[in-house]
Image (cartoon, rainbow, N blue to C red; front, side, top):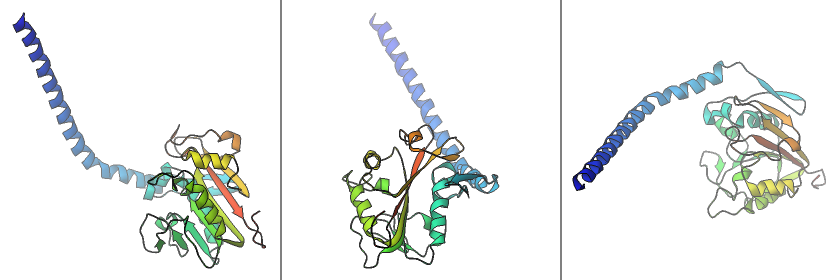
Length: 255
């Protein structure tokens, strides 16, 4: 009886050792395989950018080309629509005083405007917290691409209400007759979503784009179609974004 029990235990131990050896072998092969093939995956991504037939989306009655770039794999996420919208606004105001919150556009174009980013260090980037950022001369145009949702939420310690302070300071930096245009994903930062729903951000205009396919196609929709949007579902990254516009009139009043 004792010998039979021992024999069974030995067989179980041997089976476990064999399973572990197979797993270790698999991990070794996988590590080598991924190391060798990873550059090809990147190459395929780059080829997809330049070889895929250009497509367009419509926003406020105007047609824009999807923005595809290897940096950040824009063809796979919301950058594909955010960048062309903000980039157009920056280029049409190039002679004016411009601030960008979050170092985004400089990865794709040469930027001559001011950029504030607390964490990303790069030439020409002001590493200050937007909550405390002050200037003696306000800006005619302020833009931000999916940055506001990280303020306070992806920081330690987490401060969900900090995003409201950031938004308030951004609007204070806006000159009379100026405009603030920003984008952010719905479903990422619950406090930002709540503030937006309850109109604590006091936006002049609110617009929405919704992702409708795995190959990253977007359409403009109404609030009811995105109010319950989730980040990362059913597609990766943002599935709906807000394009918010805040303006000051010539007397400096928010409208």
